[in-house]
Image (cartoon, rainbow, N blue to C red; front, side, top):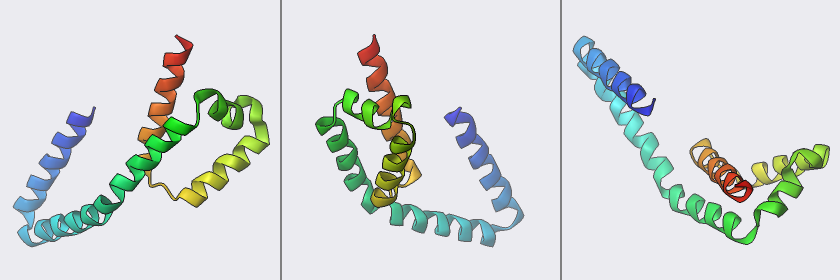
Length: 107
């Protein structure tokens, strides 16, 4: 799926470049600046994910945020999410690693 999206983005960029070179170059400059602003926070987010997975075992996370936690779990998740301000590009991989760890423990 990622490959298809990447090819589509490249195709649209080439079409945009053929239509108006100035706008395409401006879009690439804006994208590069956006990437540059995200890049410095990446190591800190990776460290945070590592600490979470190291110091909190799966049972603790499941007890605090699982289906049985109900409203309290929602409040805890909202508070931690607001305090951490983790962008989506890091939150989704963290959630995927937690899910994979749970599936590995269940097996």
